[in-house]
Image 1: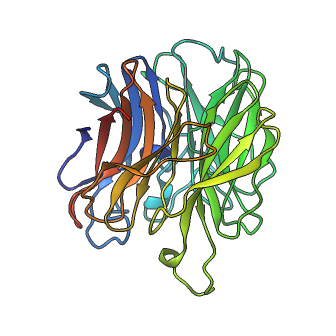
Image 2: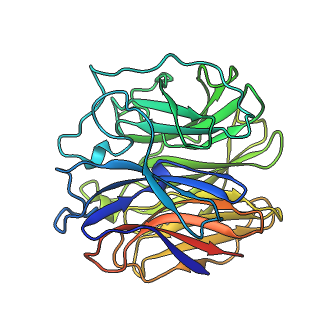
Length: 362
């Protein structure tokens, strides 16, 4: 396994690639994340909420061996950040001063297309929007406003499956009936991303939360979605860090119209929990990658040779984490079969958070 540093700067905080997305065209890979400032006494996430977070893109032209960074070339719909408002003092949002572009239809099978989703928050009142690029993320058209789909808050991260030139499925998170995060659902477009509509809810409303879906298509009809889950503590007064966190897997056999629980491939992701990234490999196996936030803090993978029905033993792809604040991976596979997994990490308990990639072959 090879570890490649994408972004690291003393005194800065690079984080959360899973909130932004990863896209690839052969050996050309683009990944998004955000960059803020380190603060030692800020709690679980050692970031300074009084200073700005800047959305950042890293691009590799050699399959993840080297990277070049730019500020994400997109316009925000109002005040705030690109998917980092919960980490900013005062929690700014786009209410009252939002300016969205008029949505239009795209050819979703365009060879250089990419779609990126963003959000203003996590709970009731959160708004979400999306962008489309036709030049491999060199520029982004939008922002286009997402509907509320009948929910009181939408916390969109980037996860979608393109079906044809007009149709795609978006896998998103909504607030629960009590206004808290969250529950996952599937939305659809039939007009080239000009409009989105609710297709189905994935699983029941949870007692804790179910958020941050990661999807993969197995066939024209069959889709798997891995979901980051948190339970409700037995003691109602328990702190968030006393609650169990794990990953569930759901399957649809009718192209996203309905969903059934499949299994629990990871029964513990540690304190705070961590989202999955799910990839269908060229050889037909599934690869599930996640951060493990209990000690020893590490990045892990599991493989399935039977479309997710059973999972192999944990594979550690990065160890020696300094504390629980790591993970949020996104993954692509190179043409030569190498897996490129991008995540945020630290090596010391009070060290700066940086963006790293593990290059490996299972």
